[in-house]
Length: 272
Image (cartoon, rainbow, N blue to C red; front, side):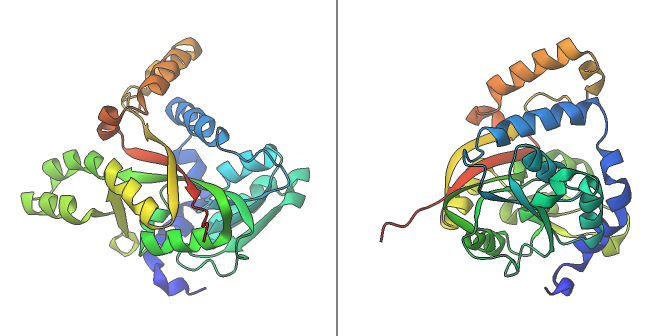
């Protein structure tokens, strides 16, 4: 693997690996994770013998859920320090015998066997952080079996508009809307990397062009609970907000409110 391809994204994630889970440890993120997992779980393969991928695995949160569901999981990340955190998460667990770890960039997944995996997750927008999201999707498709499902999150271009109006020039806003590229806003400029964004229609088009069939698309989140996370400290209220959210997050008209888009897409089967 050529680590020089994306040094900024690698440096950033190496630096924050040891405290990454703490950043996302409160009532809002617990609620958000339940929403995320319910959508993933609906698309899991029925055959537990199948192999699965956690792409851009970070500290291994979603790969751990897959292990607990009975699958064999290959954890993949560009950050060696993140992979160390994922290993440590399961080191003393009997689940470890069904886990393996691969240090790789989504732009080069040749370390993985071809057409060997029946399911993949790519959470936390790793595809949008690749040099070429289309090329990364091609690498993912190569690793998946025909008919396999990818569940992945992507940054919603429309969710960036408020930031650009408040903090950037009108020309920068126009450029964002034209090409969809923004930057990860960490203080260290050496750790700032390009993040690709899409509207819902553009995301569907990207996945279709890359050989996937979109079977489900939700927004996260329609309700502005990140700004009102204190309302989620009450378990009953959190359940009610979840019920309402799930009634909204597939509505096309509601997707523009969401910071992220979560797509389930199936590898198209060729009948040639």
